[in-house]
Image (cartoon, rainbow, N blue to C red):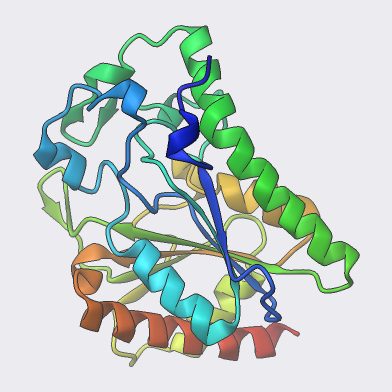
Length: 253
């Protein structure tokens, strides 16, 4: 028996599937929703509202960018605490027993059957939906550009973070290089390469699985979540990033 009921719907959402733009936006940490079968994972409401459960503002910014770029958006409808879709099944971080300062009781000591149930319920449908979309676009002769969207907390383990937007990449630096060049050093945000995370932190799984494996241009964008806590901030950041992507895609074509 799976961990999701029929009433809870598909774990993966796809919006603007008929988009004509080249970008496919991916939001692995869009939601803090938990499957009913797992309760609260032993966490307080404060913890479940915090960044450990989702990437606040990331989905809202992604939706605005999808409109500006005429892009398709794929996102996971359930919390990364149940399964982090930016991690492979064998990674301990896929179902973390601890996230920053919070222990996650409902993830402690999971046996292989429990891990497999979460993988089958959340990760495989997400991976397969995104993979199918990428393959169909390639077959149509319009290879997509993979852009994954995330947000990060301004303070991590008690240490403030000055970076406001991170442009992250793995082995393929084409799009990240173009975006950093287009942003320059005098823009409205503190933008840095591979901060506050980088490939050494295991955060480029989606880029590797769907971008690098298919020879597609790809990038991961991290936005400090205090910048996108309300609609005004979300619009400012989305407009800026959409413009940056448009310039950068022209540069690498």
